[in-house]
View: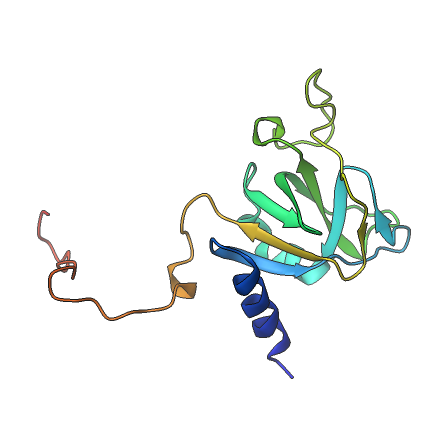
Length: 153
């Protein structure tokens, strides 16, 4: 039964037109089963193992709505059983902290449609960082890249 993550990945790939770096489900914390503020919960294991992928300003689609990663945090309060993804509604509003209030952006953003347990989210990268997840294809001789073993290209 270790294929559920793979099937979620494939599902996310089918939904999106560009490639997602990581997909998952919105999860509840002990005090939040519906997320309506400027953050939502993800699996704590995903937070610990993959938080470096949640780059400030990267697009994240949650519950079918596009947001931008503002910050990633783990708290010791009633949200301690989840990782928290703080969102911004506009890329320019993602500043890396959920605590600074700006005139234009407020605290970065607000979830426009409440997110519930089991809603899908997918994170997208600004550049292809994970070449190992890109399917390998055969290159034709005219498009093959030369090996960079000590040669200046």
